[in-house]
Image 1: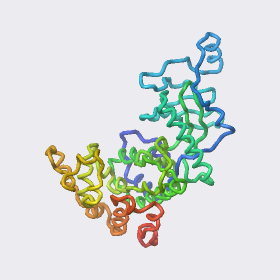
Image 2 (image 1 turned 180 degrees about the horizontal axis):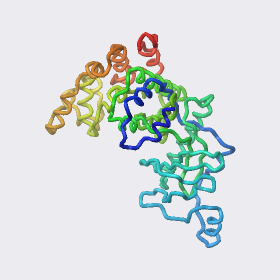
Image 3 (image 1 turned 30 degrees about the horizontal axis):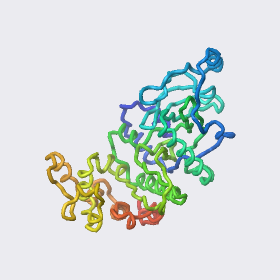
Image 4 (image 1 turned 90 degrees about the vertical axis):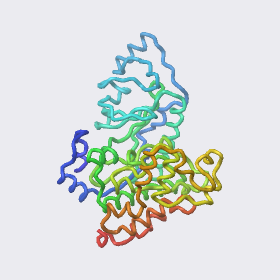
Length: 374
């Protein structure tokens, strides 16, 4: 299975051409979301209040007898301190560190009960992250109740509070889509793979919107490869309930997979808007007229205030961006028209005019006969 190839690749190793061809020809993308799969009464593992631990010698001896590591203070940022080979409760043994983020760290651990490797997300011991993690668990459980068969969801195995750190246990998956692209020198995916990834991404977004949930953090880093037939979407720390229609947030891009890199690579707001203006079309005047006081600084005379006093390198970076249709045709040999039309619908500035996930799934790019198109 392709996941075995991915799991064993060195971080700097590029995939051989025959492996890449094998991956692109066999891999059918099916995307899922975190869901709740309770093992017993897992909610009993998560107390509603912060736990305080006694520091008596009796308690330390009891920890040692149960195989728990010594008590340590968190680091200055609230991250849990650990050493490889230690236990995380008596059930899990820490094998390696898989990654980290604003929320905390993800550890690869051995589940002694299920006899399998799992990924455990350990949240920083800070109140706001603790509260966000509890919301994430609630979202996971809601998704799990509605995801019959568990085909759409990354499986949550368990969750508990350990030394004032919320710990969420998931099935261990393969690398994320961004790391896969990076390891392969950002080589773009063939159009049939873009079709499969896009279709099932939209299916999962539509699934969330039906439950009036919004992911808020869709990106290649949050699409995980875990078999020759499946991909899954993690990370629900920012998920929220929509007070309006869930379909209000509909902006989904396949440009990373088509190009092999992010479409708009900038962290500067005005530059980002200028790139969008160049690639898509000018920002609608009626939207610019309605800008609030925070956005007014980017608008002048009902137009985007660009280039203004912008650095020359930034102006050059923006001016080199081609129009969306030209950009797509650089990477697609056929079915370009359908894909361009789909992306234009997904990239509409006005969210009320933008295609919903359900509407996008009915687009000709997905509904035309697969064999005829590819």
